[in-house]
Length: 335
Ligand code: NAD
Image 1 (cartoon, rainbow, N blue to C red):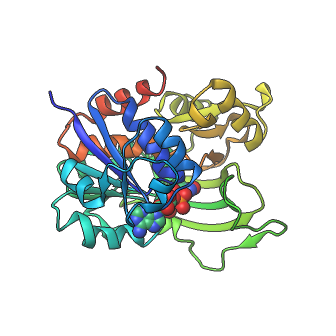
Image 2 (cartoon, protein in one colour):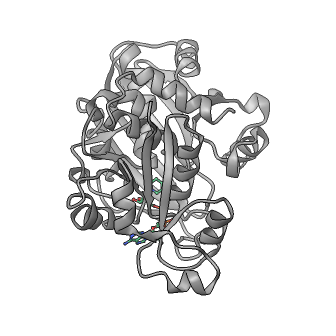
C-alpha cells in the first residue's frame, strides 16, 4: 500500500509536532515543511533531514547553509494532503492561494473560523464526518479537551447542559510576545467562543462557556458543571473516563496536584518534548450534587491536537475505521 504523502505548511508550535507525528506513522510519509526565514527551528528540521520548501525565495536559508529543495508550489505538487499550521487567518488565505488551485486536500487548525472546512474534527467524537473530505478544521486545544470528555459523559449518562470556565495559559512556553505576566484577565465576551465551537463537533450539546487568562505557560485548566439527565456516581464517572481514549485520570494521591506536576509527569513519561496528548482530569476534583456533575481538567495546549491531526489525515484520505486509526496513532507515540 502506498503511503499518504503529507506536507506541513507553518512549522511552529503545532506544525513541528504534527511533522514529527507524521514521521512516526507507518502509513504516512512526511514530504516536507515550509519555511519563511532561517531560524533555530529550521536548523533543527534540517539536522533531522526534513525537506524544507521556501515560502519567500530562500536566500536567507542558503546564506545560513540550509538546503532548500523547492518552493511551496513544488510542495503542493508532491503531496496528497497538507496540514496547515499557520497562525489564525493565514490558513484561509493559503486555502485560496495554494490548496484550491493545486487541488490539494488541507487540514486547518483551531485558529481558523469553522467555515474554512467542510466540518470540524475531534477523532473520538466525529471521525466519520471527515471521511474523504477535502477541507477539515481540527478544533482548538480547548475545544478538543471539552469535546473529548463531554462526548464520553454524554454518550454514557446523558447531559442536559454544561457551564464551563476556561482558565487559559497566557502564552506558550517559547512565546515572548503574549501575556499577561502579572494579571488575571477576564475574557469580556459571553459566552466565550469555546461553547459555540464545541457545538461544531457535538452539535446537540447545550453548553455555555466563560474564559479568563492567567500568567502561566504550561497548560489550560477547565472547570465544568454538567447537569446530567440522572444522578451519577463518582466511581462510575472515574471508570468511564479511565476507559476512554486520550483522557487520563490523575490523582492528588500520587502528588499530581497541579498543571506543573502534570507536565513533570509528562516529561518523566519520556514523550518527545515532554508532551501530554491526553486530557488530564483530577480524580479528587470529580464530584456530584444532585444531578450536577463537577470536574476539572487540564489541557496541554501545545500537543493535545497533534494526534487529532493524524487521525484527520486518515479520515480525509478515506481510511474508514475510526477506532483503528486512533489505536494506530496512539501506539505510534508509544514506540
Ligand atoms: P506559531 O506561531 O507557533 O507557528 C506558526 C508558523 O507558521 C510559524 O512557523 C510561522 O513562521 C509560520 N507562518 C506564518 N505565516 C505563514 C504563511 N503565510 N505561510 C506559511 N507559514 C507561515 O503558531 P501555532 O501556535 O503553532 O498555531 C498554529 C495554529 O494552531 C493556529 O491556528 C492556532 O490557533 C492553532 N493552535 C495553537 C495552539 C497553541 O497552543 N499554540 C493549540 C491548538 C491550536
